[in-house]
Image (tube, rainbow, N blue to C red; front, side, top):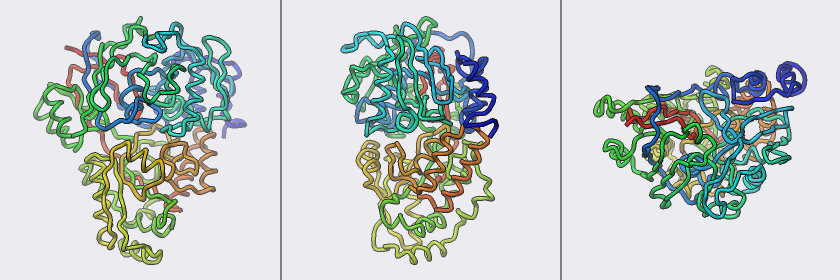
Length: 558
């Protein structure tokens, strides 16, 4: 490590001068800090940015953008409901201090400036004149540092939080010394500080009015973000209208007046809605499936549409619950490594368009990737060896394995592929598709599951993928990883190692240690994402990471 302590010498010099970061990455004084955090040069871990729709002419204000959400929700809370976190409330109505974009280390939102005087202190100055939406019981009052402090503690103490790892693991206290200042005191350095699962987390970093915290799941959505909720029917339709009091309104942002989101869960119905012009984007929430649909749409619809693509950070994975037999037996897990054919997943589900990662991290986190020569031995296919391992461990062949999935065609097909790969060894299995709420809330969160095959959100750093292997995940997935005390310590060390070169080495060592123990989380493939949009949708930024993006500069050229 360069210098002494956790932070490189260049970063310590920047801290000693108390350089102010006044506009996100790239401004004077920010480079040393971001290098210390390992965030320079794009998203954490080197994920390739997806870019934006090409600019053409001056933006036109106005219009209504039509999107769809492809699953169910159970509440209005972006803390406990993944739909509200990724596609609805956090995407439109709630502000965050900073956001995460693919081509920048972070973007200031509610914060006017960020200052790090030392590795365990983050000082935010709020933008002046911020107000909440004008609806009772908040009634358009000013946003205060107290709202931010109480929001952080609410997330920290919520047992149903989808992800509160920053609040639990990193945050010590929140101080509010004056009407425009919020100070986060950290427990120590945070190597992934500005990533999409920490300060830029789309749900856990929402700024909530303190009046709504007691009933956030049922209270009308009230934030200080660019759009306010004006009408909704749960799991049917949501209408968001441009908030005249938004802190960027003086700049004309956002350009689009209204955004309507319809819940459409059937893939054929989604395609039909796009072809008929009822929705303006297709595949925005996960990509076109099958991805061959991109070629079909372009052939049929020609120059009316554009197709964008990027390598997903989202992963398809196989998981087993190690707190339940027989999956707590390393021989059973090794048998799955000998049995599961990952290339088959990529071929059947993605028509070969994507990548099989060499280890237990998304392939898009390029800086942290292992050499396939190091890991081929763990994934070597050998059905005979798999059967011998199952027999030696006394595998219960008379028992039917349950494979749960989140109910959509790709997840279900992934479960069916696993089912078919098990069959030649005499292992019986059944695929059980579940709605998102039942999958996460009633099964995953409670440990009432055996195996699952499903796609994960896209993470822009190793923080969550490795934490899922930890005994304490701080995540709704509490039973998905290895839970080994030795690896726990390695993960904890990586989380506070801000020297990027040293952290990369640690993360690679963790991956090998996980493979040596045959972690019950096998990443099967990263897919190429293809999304379709009508050409009149301009400057619509894409992001390989699953984070809520306001897309303030998007506009409609109609």
